[in-house]
Amino acid sequence: MRTPANKEPGPLPAWKRIPRGLRFRLALSYVFFFALILAGIGVVFRQTLATTLQDHARAMLEEDWAAVRAYLRIERRGNRMEPVWYYDKNDPDEAFFVERLKRVFILADAEGRILEISTGYLSLGPETPETIRKVMDEGADVWKVRLTGHGLPYLVRFGTILDERRRPYFMAIGRPITDSAGILSSFTWEYLALAPFLLVSSAVIGWFFARRALQPVNALAETAGRISASNMNLRIPQRGAEDELDNLIATFNSMMDRLNASLQQSRQFSADVSHEIRTPLTSIRGQLEVALLTCQTAEQYREAILNSLQDVDRLAQIVKTLLLLSQAEAGHLVLQKAAIDLSALTRDLVAEFQIPAEEARVSLHADLPDECVIEADRVQIERLVSNLLSNAVKYTPAGGTVRVSLQRRDRWVEIEVADTGIGIPKDYLPHIFERFFRVPNSDPTSERGLGLGLSFVNWIVKAHGGRINVESEVGKGSRFTVGLPAGAHQSTNDTAPLATRPA
Image 1 (cartoon, one colour):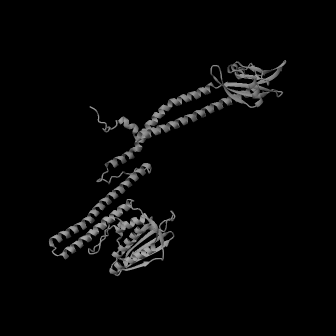
Image 2: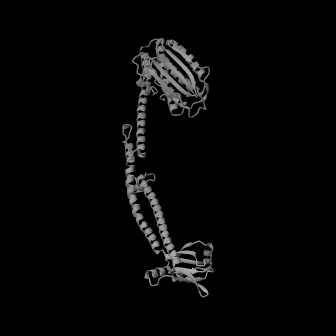
């Protein structure tokens, strides 16, 4: 039977999932960096050991050089100069020491003629007259590592010595460094043999610590997997280490708090919308049913239709306001900023509200400068000021006062709407900018709004980069203070002049 081409692949086997896991990659990274460190340590230690052995060999050869100069004399014998060794041949220790010095030894005159050369030096290869003259012309000591025909290493020092008449001669002595090379080679092979064991050990340790390090991440994933719309209260406890994982846990828990609050707000919003829309719909349906059953004259039908139209307008206003607010919060409502005279705009709005204020027997006053130009969206600023004035007039009892003031502070403009109304209880102040939130009122005959006006005010203020503050006391009134940037070129370091809680 042929397998369908679009069949989804099954889960990978466990051994294939391991290399793809974060734990494996963390352990592999740990082993990789440990291997680099191990290699670096090995190179440094080997180089240090090689330098130490070389310094030791040079120090020993320096001692031999000084000893040769103490035992060796260059004297004339007949027509030629010959080296003569002065030591006690009857002293076996001294005789052995001198013979050792002469094992790898060469002496030549300034012309490059060899006066004495040992068999050991011949195994390294005799020096040419050109080499001898070059060393004597430079006058500096030369150190070289030379190999015998069997590949044994010798450290050789070339230099110049003087006889009793201050005539220069070329001399070179050597010393085997086979032991030093053996020590260095032994260290290298032993270190290389130990390295795999250390790497395996580091892999096991890295695997173990990666598992411990990822436990909070696994717990985070497990908790996230158990979260659903009906179970938003799960949280991961902090470990107390104050590290990146604790920061991740704190961020996750904070995200869950925000999601839970957003879900609760969404549920409340859905319930409020349903309630607000159902109320006018129910009223419309009831009025129309009553009209069908009881109305007999055209005037009665007309009155029923007018009442229904009022509820339709209310419903349309709710839908329109919700649509605008949703568009604004989603970023689809773009501000059309331009230079506007805020003083003239506020003066016109105050004039419009004088009639409803007089009907409510409320005194409405304005304290405005002749001109106050800001850069803002005129439509939204009108909506902002209108909402604040409407609320102030609506919730101020007869005989009260509403006062609007406008003033500039540095690069900010403050709009203040204060009233002597019923005030807002302190417990409700943090919620007045939430959708559909209305302060409970014990007076059933009082007019109640939609609970959306201040939500729009809050968005308009934030969209213009401003701040809003509310001060209120029950029975004494409320004061709304809005700070807006004065123009398009305000400094990014300027802050709003309100030492208050931002909306």
